[in-house]
Image (cartoon, rainbow, N blue to C red; front, side, top):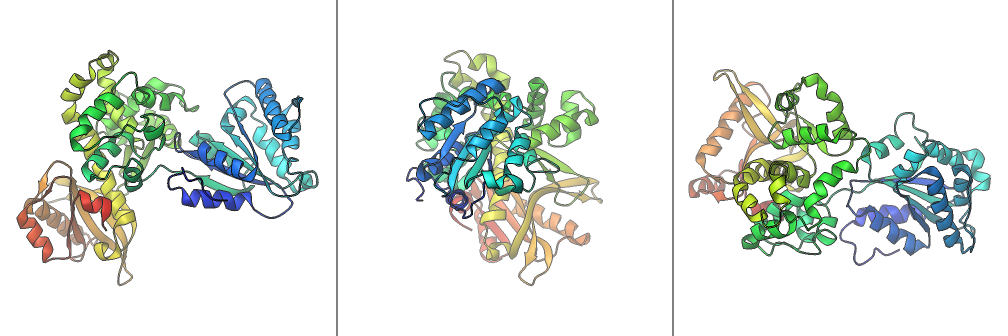
Length: 489
């Protein structure tokens, strides 16, 4: 089955879906597809269903009785029956579904938005499990059943622990967002600066270009501000309320006011639990549950410090949510009134640069070091990249490291390959390099770094001639500007 021409990238996902769809054998097989909303999961599943002549049912949030009615009507249409099936319960519906491969050939059956059905019928995963048991195989046909959902917390539990479907799946596919390089290609933005600014707002979610902006992309650096005003801060456009809807769509997030407050605290630069608690005026212990829920829902990430095991940082995983909380939420009343977007954007430029673009640029620099930098650049192969905090006992202070690359050197030793500093708005010079050298010396004293640990300077603006000259004669100094982030290693 050829991948549809209109599908961007997703070669790996398509290959796994086609492999699963054509698995030989007479027994029914289960696959699970998940991922954050708007990533194109339904598009891929619809394509594989049409290409293979399979059956697809997209659930809605409704009652069990109504869901069974909808499912019976859809299955009857697929079977070419004029009269809909009237299922009394899901045992009957699943049994009928497992028999649709009447020709004995593998047949795809997709249930999209499966969490909606399971919410109304909590026993449904157990019913599917029973239908897949060896004892039921004599009544089954070679159906390739795909359960899909965007509720990450629910889908994560579907195959874990003592869940009924644990160990039953022949496919567990997570459809990710596009990384920053693929996103630039998808948005057809060739200018690296424009690409990064756009990515800091909308990330790598494909639907934000097609469905949400109808292909309206920034034409270049001079058009970016106008694009923000017309496509993102415009109350008549879908992106305007999307960040609020993302939170409302998560079934696990009941007290949305609390979760919005936690996200606002992180967007304001509070990445430690204590700082988030101070921002909200709560005890740190009170935040364990909401932080865990947000993490399970894919809204935030929890990253361990590169150098201190007792420290970690929370970061917002969806750029549009970070943009909303830093820029839009504080001015929501103004933005809802037409004609106010330009003035709001004008007065929030500094906030956008410091609270949105700066942290996002640092994250992209870490992604580049982990996934795009070559072994010659790294001095080895990276296994972990994170930010970190380094103690300076003599000065009684600490130093922040934006990029710390751990890995295996060319000689086969596990070591700290590189440390780096990322500055979006600053032209980096020798002073930035000296700071990194000093931090490297502190790490060397503790046995973490060596003189071979490389020094990375990441800049969104550029580098002084003096620093460029030093880097030309010293391979341990690496200068990474925007063109190299997007097109080099």
